[in-house]
Length: 316
Image (tube, rainbow, N blue to C red; front, side):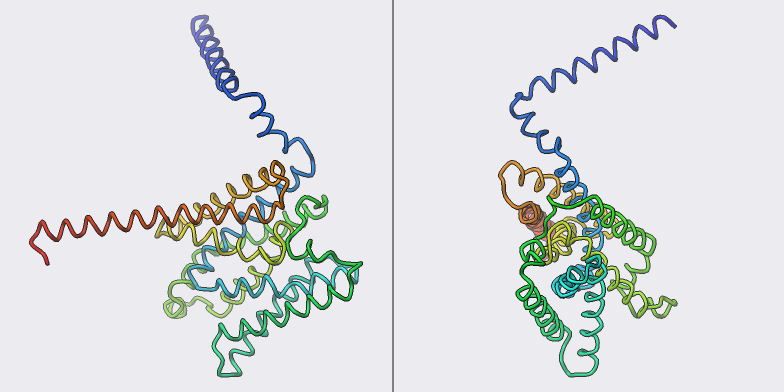
């Protein structure tokens, strides 16, 4: 027993020495630079909100990319602006106004598409630009009440504890529904006809997904604002789509990319003294560029291997 304890103590001592050696290898200035931002409460709140928003947006983005609803995400993200402004004016939580206008925009797009000969992309373009313009007008006539830059580009460094709680609740709700119904949503994305045949409520699933899109946009508003919310709803899923062809892996890769971009972007915004929302989205874009390069290299190697195989078997 004493020998075991002595051996355990030695192993613990070696592990501690190794940890000290690793930390000692990092220059003190660099270590301070890495940890300094997280010593402030406002940076901790900003990181929490950005990471949570990134995860739920990344999960939803996987299905938006597969279904082809990227433009729909753009429309909902812009259409919530009037709801945000009106909520500020009446003193109501902005999430209520944003959600109502997001759902209203989706319903209006559907009505225009079903009652005219216009295609869906045209209906989306007309509705979301008009509703967004209404929001701009409302902001312009109430400059003392609403800061346009905060609405458009977010103000994650200024979020309150109440804002954090709101983001956590809405994100938890959206994430839970997405994960619980992931099989139905995936079937809806790939084959709605087959889903209808086996009893999937196709229309209800589509409506639910659009409602979750509105909720997710509300969550993203706190982190990156109206304009950049669409990036969080598209880029992580597109990045994961380039790296894997399985939805299960996409649902792991997309949040991982989004969280990495959130951490690096939030940290970089403090160090470089730039806007956190823009830098987070830039980091997501860089991750997409890397995935694109990796996918192209993989495809070229696969094509080259295929040509070699054809040549080796006497093919054309």
